[in-house]
Image 1 (tube, rainbow, N blue to C red):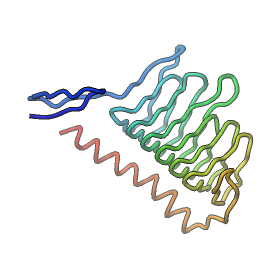
Image 2 (cartoon, rainbow, N blue to C red):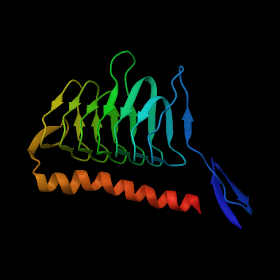
Image 3 (tube, helix red, strand yellow):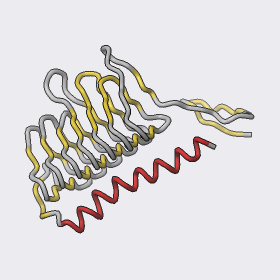
Length: 196
């Protein structure tokens, strides 16, 4: 016997088969999400509208990619972790995300351009018309105000976010590249389970 909590009521159910829950993938205003090869999407993720992602991307639990008011385009090896939100502003700003980018748990990217090899820490917020150049680490909880440009090769932290120190090659490889590649591996574990 299996017990499931659904909504605000408890339901006691006896199931003989595995329950399949699907992510919300929906067209809006004639735009439908497009996915590259070997992407993995969690069962309760939401992806709507003009969202295009490259190969080897992963969208994790409770993540929301809302391409309803403007487009969201992502490169390869991008992971959008649990509870993160990517959105944009109508007729103003798109969200464009490069390759090897990790958007941490509960982070928000709103109408920003993010270059290659970037880690957006847990709970960080990046606002409209911000440009994050390549090889940048944005610390957990940082707030990057709109209309800013973050210089390549630095760590940014604080509210509002400020340049803290240079990001050396060793830390860039350890934190940014390793995280992006690890999330490809983590997604493969879930793919294996789903194929059983």
